[in-house]
Length: 498
Image (tube, rainbow, N blue to C red):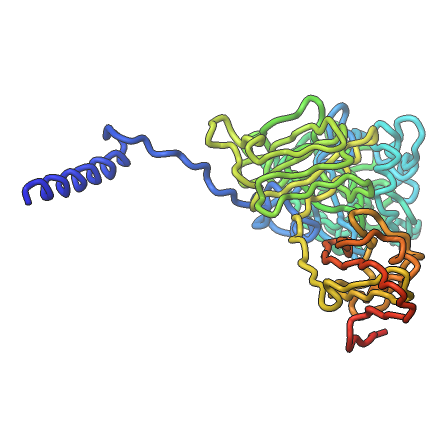
């Protein structure tokens, strides 16, 4: 009895030691540290088209969303998302200047120096100094209206048609002191000028006032400007403000807007486009929240398919492209160096610790991307592998055919006939001339001439579909001595559904 008690006590004591070893600072068995479960990236770092449409500059309470598009010297130009225009395009306002310039000889927008420079020549505003030819194709042609001096002390409406860039407008020509300006083809997407501050990434106030396409009412000498962080003001078209003592010359900026076509935008990520100088892991802290690089839908043949258990990705036709994996921690860029490659989740380490290696791709955004010389990044999202359907032989399994007879052999499978890619006997593709097919779901009938070429014994037949297969067997028997009767080995009571 004493021995039994000692054994039981030892077991209890061992259990207590193992339990205590799970607490920090206690000696014993070291627990295995598990990688944290993946969570999807926040919308500030990855968003779809609907998410882009949710941003605006209409009041100070909303978050400023920005898009990288075109050039600002050697860097990408940033554009603030203002809202959605009537045609579904996204109205954007540059966060920095294109130039410091006078309005021109008159406050008429249609005759302004800005409109005259909307060409692709040299350093004009649509030249390669600002946009690539492909980027220009992503920009909508916008027609805008403005009121211009009519020479009689009043204004008249003018239209400037089909321009890629345009200047924002005021509500009217008497908007001095107001704090709202407008973009969009209908002049109805509001921008709160007090929101255009340096903390939101804009050039700010005194040296950064920019032209509107609005003249001061009835005046060909004065135009309206926007002062970031403050509101609308008036200034001479040559940028000169005069008082009783001396003139003051200001450098007024050209800060245009444009409308971005969204028809072939797939999604956007705060991660900049992958390149040879950017690979491996990049944390959210190394990216700018709500500032996106667009990914356009790829028409290529590249594919990334995540396994059913989520632990690996099979990549095909993606040589020299990048596999991108993004979760709530950051993004990982991996260059693909062959046309057929399998990437394990453990190959992706979302941080510096060993425990930051992924165990699966669940809740991650995964895609393949590449960027061309025109700065257009195309991408294709990974897909999840689908379970292989299970198809069943519903009639005719194990059928027989006697050699030297004209009997046929019919087998039915429940797979859809329009998904059938081939019939195989003993793993060899059978010429379609040797059988007939009918719907219901797949009714296969081998012709006697074909069956009579097969050897005596059991043969395997496989119905191969685009997404699965089914197999059964049939038997070829020796011809009966002196038997010249016709034998039909079609399964009994089968009905063709056409």
